[in-house]
Image (cartoon, rainbow, N blue to C red):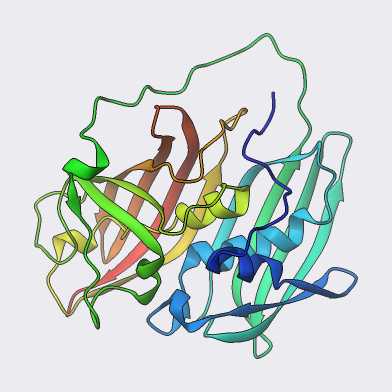
Length: 278
């Protein structure tokens, strides 16, 4: 078992890597990090970035043999542009698993809370294959997700997105489900921090079932990683399958799988999101 997507690496100076490199330790378990305005979604950083910043601070304190297995995120409040504090602590370090907690704090208030489990590999006779990726259209054959100033979130400028099936946001679709190819616009090797950022890029299922000026936001996000993470080349797309399992009272229960372009699983996710119809 190994995580081929590297958990620790030197970051080349792309826009995203500059944010990761800007995380500075200030004391034991405490860090400061900067959020730039181009990574905002309305008045807050998009959730993939804020999660990645907290994770990047956490992983500096964990031995490389203990790989990220699960991560649970609560989006508590806004994380605006500017310099903010990250606070981390080890909850327990057992023989196989280290449990950690981290928070992104803005003006002393919790904006994002993250709980993560890092575990060593163990020998096992049990191997269960993940679901296979269905046959799909190539990214370039799909509808490109547009950037529309004042409507599309600012952070989407940093990503290429192509809708493979399903409907665009605010199209009053009959189904919330969709599939999307995506990648960073600046080619860069994917670390786990990059993967976490990509995991929150697509619009949540449910936004495509309403009309403008409705809005949506994530309450919680749960991430699981497969035992082996494959290599992903710097300019490759990843495929995001996003489905709504249930919805009511303005809350959506969503489930997602992220694959490499060649069909290997990268991430399994769950999300509770709120959608506001106006």
